[in-house]
Length: 122
Image (tube, rainbow, N blue to C red; front, side, top):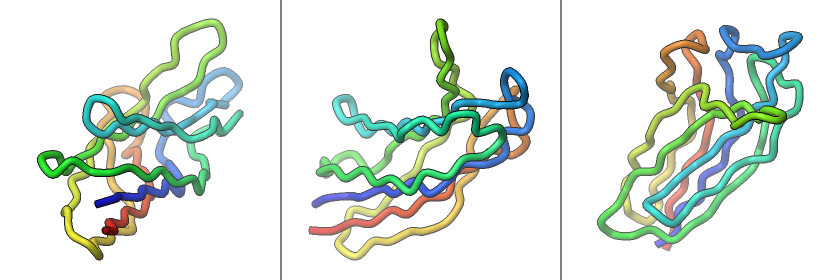
């Protein structure tokens, strides 16, 4: 079975807009131990960014969750995780979700979220 995840946008990062109210945002996804992917970096994005990028991977029957992190790409320092969350999906052909999910953030945002679409196919 294969899952495709399309990241449409992120929003709600007003509390962390970096130098000159700009952030270089990107979304990082992880599935299990060995599968990871990230979007291109949205330079000088500020508190929100649009992506429209898709990641597809084969699923393991025992694992039906992937994690999402929104990060700020920084020059000359380690990238900073601004918010994170997880998405549980049903492992069945035809599973489809399109919408917005909230992310957990202790210090950077005002209800940060990611808009995505998740599809499951044989």
